[in-house]
Structure formats: C-alpha cells, structure tokens
Image (cartoon, rainbow over all chains, first blue to last red):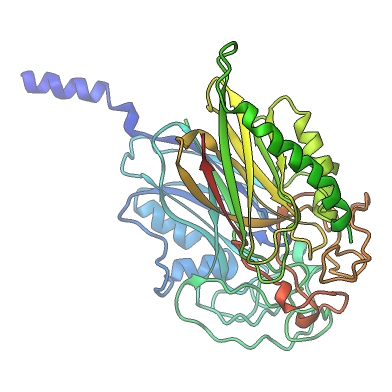
Length: 232
Length: 241
C-alpha cells in the first residue's frame, strides 16, 4: 500500500526539470545560398541522422539531393523524436531567419538536437547540426553550422532533376533567374561518404562554361548557418 | 591608399591611451569602481589579407557592432569599405552601453601579431563583452572580428583563445576591382568609402571569400594569394587585472 501511494505521488508530480522546452532560431548568413525546408528534431542519444566519413542513409540522401524530408521524418517519428518540420514554410532565403519551439514533454530521453536542410544551389550539399546535447541551464546559446556533402551525387553543378539519384540540381523559381545555363559540367564523381563540402566552384559564364553555378554569388566560406537555442 | 593618412590619426590616440593607463590601476575608494584590464592579442592567419587597425570595444549586451541579416551602420560601412575605424569607434564610444574603445596602431600584416590593451571599470565585470573589428583590406567591404565575447568568465591571469571569421558588410558590390579595393593588392587609388549601397542586398552576411582574377573574375584586381578560409585570425584575450 505504501508503495502504491508513492508511485501515485510520482505520477501526479513528475520531475518537471527533465522535460525541456526551447526555441530554435535558424539564420541564413550566406551571400547567396537558399536552405530547403528545415528539419528540426529533438531525439534520443541512440538516434543519429548521419555519421561523417560513413555512407549516407537513403533518407539523408533524399534530403541532401532534393530537399525531401519525408524519409528522415518517418525515421525520427518511429524513434519517438519531437519534430518541427519546415518552420520557414518553404525556402529560407539568404539573410532570413526562422524560429520554432521544441517541447520534449514526456519524452525525457530526447536530449539531442539535430537540424538539417539542403543547400541550394548544390548537388548534394546540406547544413547540419548533428546531435547537439541541449543545455539544461536556461540561457541563450549560439552554434555555427558547417556545410556537408552527402557524397551521393557528383557535383556537376548543372541544372537538373528534382528526383533522387538523378544528376544535377533542383532549381526552384528563386534560383532560376540567378543560375547560368548550358554548362558543360564540372568534373566530379560520387564521393561515397558524408564529408565537409569542398564548396562550389562556379564560373562567371552565364551561358556556358563548366558550371551553371555563379562564382560571384553562390560560393561560401563556413559557417553556412547560425542556430540560436534559447532554453526556457 | 587610405592607411598612411589614417595611421597618422591613430598614433596620437594610441599615445594618449598609453599615457592614461596607469591612472586606472587602482580601485576608486569613492565609487567602489574596480578597473579591469585586458590584453587583446590578434594574429593574422591569412596569406594575403592585411587587417586594418583593430577597433576594440568593451560593451554590454545592448550594443553590438552589427546584426547578421540587418543593414550595417554608416560607421561600420566606413570601416568595412576603407579600413578607417575612427567613426566606428566614435559612434560606439557615444553609446551608453559601451564602456571603452581602443584602436590598434597600424595594419596587422599577414602572419603578424598585434597587441591591443583595453580596460574598463565597474563595480564588477558582470556583463562585460568584447568585440573586435578590422577590415581585411584587399576586399570591397569585408570585416574580420569577434563579437560579444564574455569577459566575466576571465579571472586575473586567465587567457582564452578565439578564432575569427570574416563578414561582408553588404554595402558595396564585390567587384574586387582596382578602383574599389583599398588594400595594397589593388592600385592604391581606390576611393575606399562610398555612401552608395550596391551589393546584392543591404545586410551584413558571412563573407563568401574572394573569387580573384586567377579564378576567372575578369573585373578582379586580386590574385590567388588574397583568398582565405575561415578562421582568418586568432585572438587571445588575457585579463591582466
């Protein structure tokens, strides 16, 4: 009987410190890169979206090649993650910010924060915050994110397909007017593993040259994203 | 070239600062204010980007040099386009949230290290932040620096090291042309500051690097040696009192 009362007491007064609520603000500080819809997730330590140096999962590949979040979202939902999908309601343009709130509620094991989105224009480049342990002390914390290459598609830097596994880059309307045309293709091969992106090559020839990417607009130096976490 | 002219302005300021420093060594028995002194040591890690004289500001969180994604102040624009930090430091110094401003004494050449003393007084160092800004001078409107470093975590004798990245003020097109780049890689005849804002957007962003003539940008006066990666500088902050 005593034991029952104790457990009832615990049920009525769970440890509030174990649940976490925090805001995640994502800023695009680049000169000319667009972020595809962002995936923000709090998940358990046993879950990871990718491992640098290893081959990308098919779910990560779909995100990195065409901005498709459905595979990663299904994977995370199955793992009991708290997910904020597409907080910017579409592309996050250079210089823009978006914010979302994550509340882990009863999912106290979801101590890790991951944020990913494809970078356009690239073939299979993406930004990533990979399993950050969210601080428990209230405060504001800023993190800088580097650009990764999923290693699943050759960086030919040409306009191309919105289908996974097809060469070339998806071209949303925002980029259609900026990119060059009729490039011959930058020399490239499928790298085979997730790594730090080498950056865009691009060229200054809008109607030819090796690349449809514009070197004066679409290059970057890391970091490519700023994430500010505010723990309440 | 704007730097020789400006360095003449900087030297008397620096002499003034050096002369005043010892007066602030002791605590003020009337106000209870304590003096907090720091040594800021900046090393230029680039191959071909001299830094303009350092602008160092000790401030509280209500002041910042810029907000990413927002337009630069005219004073920051002047620093980023010409390397002249006088207006930037004057504007900062007039802000109620700024405790101290200091300027370095000259260009920080690639591979070189500069030491800038800075000090501020208060009843405690709670909320003290440090910002450094310079221009990588072989750019149109680049900035290098660290922003809002928390000084209150430093005890006397402590040293912390930070790595700095580059920003673009977003106030001038990145033509890299000889008539717009003020640094020694260009003609030396560049105009430096120009109030017109003609970059792709009027907002501060992280610098994408320079393309250079060697890499196919026909308008560029720059060469491969002027390219860089982040981090472009190392900053050591020591609390000396």
